[in-house]
Image (cartoon, rainbow over the protein chains, first blue to last red):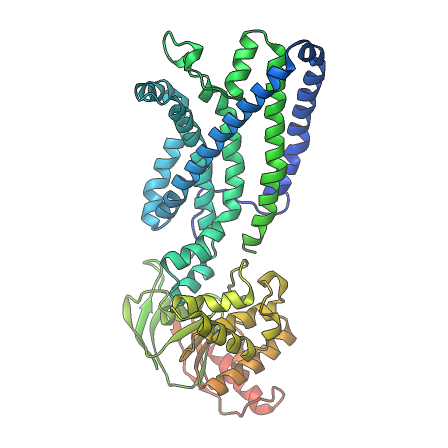
Amino acid sequence: MRKRIHYRYPRFRGALNHPVSFLHKLLTPILLPLGIIALLAFFAGIPLIISSNVRFLVPTVLAATGATLLRIVISYILSVIIAVPLALWITKTERGEKIFLPVVDVLESIPILAFFPVIILIFIKGNFLEGAAIFVLTISMLWNILFALVGGIKLIPETISDVSNVFNIRGWLKLRTITIPAMLPELVTGSILAVADGWNIIIVAEVLHTYVSGGTSALDLFGLGSLMVQSSASGNTALFLIALVAMVLVIAFTNIFVWQRLLRLSERFRFD
Amino acid sequence: MIDISHLTFNYDKETPTLKDVSLSIAPDTFTILVGASGSGKTTLLRLVAGLLKTRMGTVNVKGKVAVVFQNGALLPWRTARENIALPLLALGESALEIEKKTRVALSRVGLLGLADKYPRELSGGERQRVGIARALAVEPDILLLDEPFSALDVNTAERLRVDLLNIWKTLKLTVLMISHSVEEAAELGQIVYALKDGKLKNAVHVNLPYPRDITSSAYLDVVQKIKASV
């Protein structure tokens, strides 16, 4: 019996379409010029940075980087916690897939930012602005991870499912020995895309005052995104450049030291 | 041990994969189902293994069943030892028992030295041996084999066939194996059934002693007999 593969499932067939090769391909045309631009801008701005109070700027940017990173990490963990049981539930039955995958497809297509002003108002009422940012980041990361996990489960060969049925490998034992390991390669590739989405939306998630009528920067959350917007608006080029370089460095280091390593590690969990 | 009576099975409404199949397999016998691709032999094996539900007819199986799949069907992130231990974990065996049974199963297939290797570090034949060891670890009464030698080279397949015969004789198992090779069926089977377009043809009883001389005229006669049914 042939399993129907949903069109959104990541399928990496052949070396050229492999995620590692894909990232390597991305590294040269996108990340490298980006890094060069950031470094050039940084060096061009050195006189400005020197003339300003560097002792004040660097700790501020470091603290903002930490705050933003923490926000992204919390949102990523939350989206994984939501996506794993959801993916398991959706793929549990063929009927579940038929019903819920189109629903998830529609939900994913709805731009989260369209609802952002409403979400912010709800969180402001609860006096929990951080919650608004984490909510938006979590939702924007969720879909990539969910589709990747569903894809991972669907890539489990039929003979492996037969093995679990014949030998009565079920429940938690099946989950920890078969299903979760099988999901790992797709979880890593989905996570790379999800966190990239998180960085894309970070400015919107931190600069909250624009969504509230008469809102002031007091509503903004402290972080790299808001720091870049505020420094740009106030003409503080030195601060903007340091924040920009910090962001590029964090993204590059995350890619090199986290995702590339996880991609290599996850290869052992891939079926032939 | 295995009784199949008037079994008809279809995946879709139009074309039945199995048509009114009836057969009975006695304990401790080596039975082979031979047929071309699409003849329905895998479907029949899956029905006996309980992987498919019967709709018309009955399948009665008495005894513990284990299956050896094509290419071993191993988990790439578990070592040979861990793959073999998995069904035992499902049975709730103690760690000591699992270790003991895993070692016995590995030694039966001659892989004790490769217990801690991952499937990617093993050859095709070794992977298939791990698959056989995993099936033997649960101490089955009935061993079902789904074209276990189809992906192996000639020499490896031949060595595995000899080992399988020894395992069958030693453990007194009831074996039902499917194959698309008439020669393989004549070399291994005591009773060979041919499946053609979902219909079971007459059984060919092979009364030749093991190991069979594949150059003898008696063997070649058996091959011709089976070929006439396929």
